[in-house]
Length: 478
Image 1 (tube, one colour):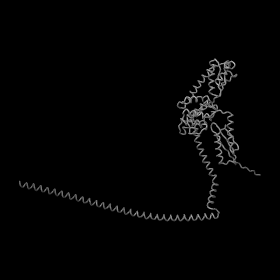
Image 2 (tube, rainbow, N blue to C red; image 1 turned 90 degrees about the vertical axis):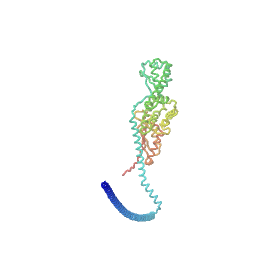
Image 3 (tube, one colour; image 1 turned 30 degrees about the vertical axis):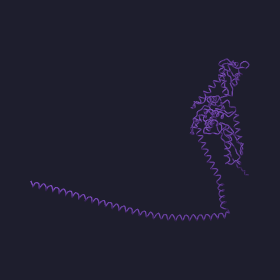
Image 4 (cartoon, rainbow, N blue to C red; image 1 turned 180 degrees about the horizontal axis):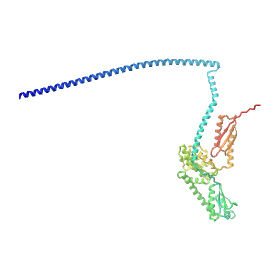
């Protein structure tokens, strides 16, 4: 037993010693590897330090080279600046010497030489400057005119209207010839009553089966027509029945006028208007302007105004209202020789109409100043509607009067030799004396004639003014 215990002890000691030796060897290996790693790291750090030092040395060398180059360039720049200043000073001295020599030779001071140079340039280049100015102004005016013409044509092409002409008299057909005698009545009582009540004239001649109702007031003419047709249909004709039928016809015309005015506003997409305005609009249906139905003309102007307003980018609703109402004053019976534009504007102002519309109505004959773009739109649309082919029938007397007025206005200016109106007064050709009117004054004279025509005359559409300046030089060799 003791021997076995000793062996066990020895084995335990031997195992412990082996474990200690193995640990010591492992520790030594670990310390050796750590030392190797540390040495490797120190070597890498040293290598990186040397590389950084080398790069820094190279950068310092490059910086020194660049500094030396910059110093050299700065020195060269200073030298060149000094040389340039020296050249400028030399040039100034030479210029002063040459100026003094020129003044001595020419006998002029510096101010006199400067004035002489400016005068020479003005004389040589003045004509060129005037020509260039005229070209630029003409080009700008032409561009504006082309753009305005494009917008106007675009609006007119989108508008489709029917050309109609009305007359100042109407025919009423009779069932037989006996009815003419009954209309006249005993000793002319019936026809006198009819004419006094209606304000119209009955023309009874040998034409079979018809009677002509004539009156310059279209509303009264319509009342007379309706009343006469009812009398003829009834067959009983007495002064009392005539008066009753005339009153009934007058009430019917008023209702018809209101309906026509309301339909015109509704057809244009406008909200309902005041009853007085609608009635006056409807009365325009019975009124003529140079044989053009005034209500149809107003509707056409409203459509043109709305299209033109849309073309130039403003609200078309006030433009449409202004176009529809621009001739409203023509239906106001209380108007006694005054301007229909101002009368219509005054009525619309009392009824609380939009101020832009009121101004456009008042200014459409240029009797007041335009306060917005809507007034020129109404002027343009009114002229376009009245001047389109077949819209109106002008009499020979009005044509002669307008042509004579144009020619007299042109001849009233100094330098005008002759003036001729062409194309129904839509073109005015003015011949001037070239000795009194030069090219610059010709453009100004044309503008003054245009302003005078716009101020003194009233006309539909536009008037083209063409000024002719011709100068001829003739010699005869013998």
